[in-house]
Image (cartoon, rainbow, N blue to C red):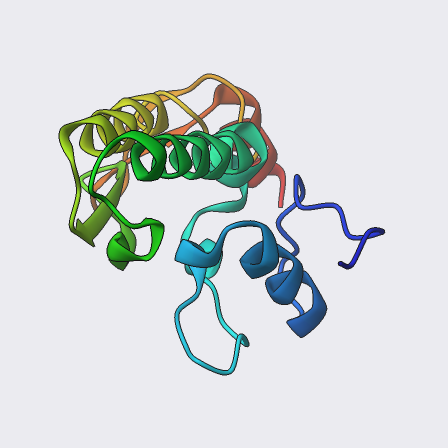
Length: 144
C-alpha cells in the first residue's frame, strides 16, 4: 500500500498514486479498470476535506458488515455517478440496501451546509445557482 499518501486531502489534480491508494482502501470509488480515475475527482475539495474520507469509511464498513450477515457481496455496490446538484453532493449507485442509502443521504444533507472550497460550515449562496460557500471564502473571492 502507498503508506505515505494522505487520503484526507484531495489534491487539486489527483495523481495516479493518490487514486490507487484510494481505490486500494475503497474499491467502490474506482471509475475505470486502469485505476487512473476515482469518483473523488467529482467531489469539491471542501467537501472532501470535511467529510469525504468519513463517507468512504462509513460506506466501506457498512458494506463489509452487510457482507457478513446478509446475502450481499461487497462488489455488488456500484457508484455510477457523483456530482453536485442543487447545491448538494449527489451520489447515484446500483444495489443500495437501505443502510447504504441512509449513509449517502446523510452526507448529501451535510454537503448542503458545508463550504465547497474550505469545508467550513456554510449557507447556500445564489450565484447562477445555489452553492454552499462560507463567508470567509466569499470575502477572499472578492479580494482577488
